[in-house]
Image 1: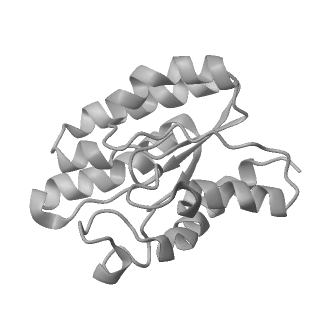
Image 2 (image 1 turned 180 degrees about the vertical axis):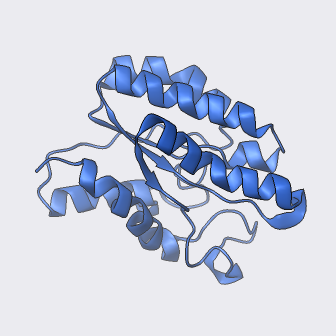
Length: 177
């Protein structure tokens, strides 16, 4: 469940990290199928509104939550982000799913207090609910303009495997052989 970073915005769907995840699961002979419930532009509130229907429809063993970037870009309150992510985690756990929270960071133009609180929100939620965390989806390349499409927000196809590696580190311990 994510936003444009997981919906392969500006790319062929087969180039995005979610499609690459499905390929990796098959290659490693892990018996999981992947449902990409990502919507470009989605916020944590949108995810919270959709989670119950998605859980009922798909009965996931694992839920990857990559939401919050659009909350930050809109300057929405951190408490609201944490409450929404927490509700998604709670509902997923209640449905029997293991959860991975994927972290995001904001550029410094919102000021140091907001930027730091935003970055900490993901770890705070993961710690509170005792779920796995992939700390920062763009770790190691987020500061490199060539890693992004012309909009300077959405990663290129070339860095999708790097994103998958960031996710995989947190996801692999949640998967059963």
